[in-house]
Length: 427
Figure 1 (cartoon, rainbow, N blue to C red):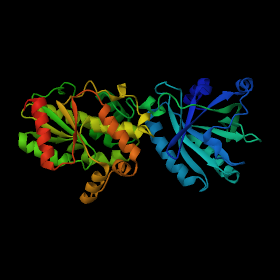
Figure 2: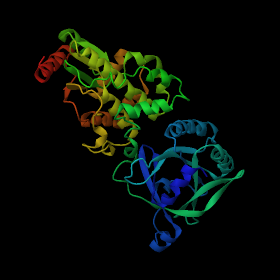
Figure 3: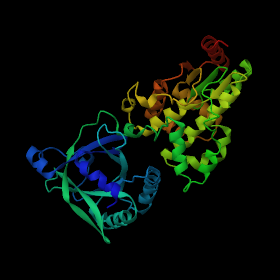
Figure 4: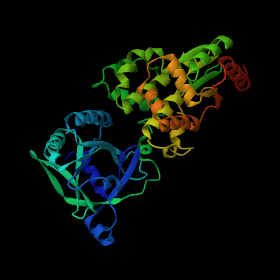
């Protein structure tokens, strides 16, 4: 068994497991046999994730365990494609994770499989093949004869066969943790808080993503980077179709300002490449884009006011809302360090967040008739995701932020924002 997988085992029974089913996170824990007997809990109903499993169905979990987080992120995404391609069609696949409650960077991600007993031989051949070559920890789950108790069995690869490790664990119900498990891994994985952290991820991608080197060449050196502009810097944020483009161009013309956009135009040749990568790599790419934009802001801000169409708020809000599933209550609490502005990133003088009624925003998107990103498509059909994005925008700390209703006419919105800018930035 791989060294990193072995390192998880000493605290294995302290872990909580989460399975995402129909948009809800279902939790369970495990206990050693002797603990289970002492507590006499065999009469309790099985955890909800197993409640819909029929007699003779088989369940498995696959957790991606690697000390190399770049390879782990890549393999996690590739594993889903492989499983969907190679598993029998009657097999049901759900995202899952395992973590130590409230322990940062303890989260490992994977998939939960459910199948009927007829599918077990081909599934176990597939799992055996995976564990010979890849950083996967496999567990199988067995139901007691009365259907009330489930046990978890770890697998180990020995020679050319899979075998179950002798230790078995009793599966027990677990309450939802105080923090959504995804929040344990947000810092410098989904959201980056320094140029050094984001650059380090792209550097480690050089062997598998040659384009990363071209992106890194665009970064300013530390000696060149400036953390302040001489003229005011105003960032306009908001979801697509809230009127950002119209407003930023009008502000540019009215104030005689320079207009910049994030991610910067210089990254356009590589956006489609990095949009196909796992979140860790994709988010590092967009974080680097913010630092390139910051250097452009500082240079242009020596000559005139600067208007920026999106900046760190968008990068962070979308990343947080994607990482944390479910209702808004699953987000990190207001004041959490995940909302703090990076200490080495230029702070704008003012951030204006445009808001719009969801139905009006959809109408504007239809009228534009443009293609949508995956995240914009998610905003359209997933109200919870939109609410998480909007709330994450609101909770980000650092620069002065004001929310503006974008439903009036473009000229009325422009006049309102001009009043704010003149009051806050003395222009």
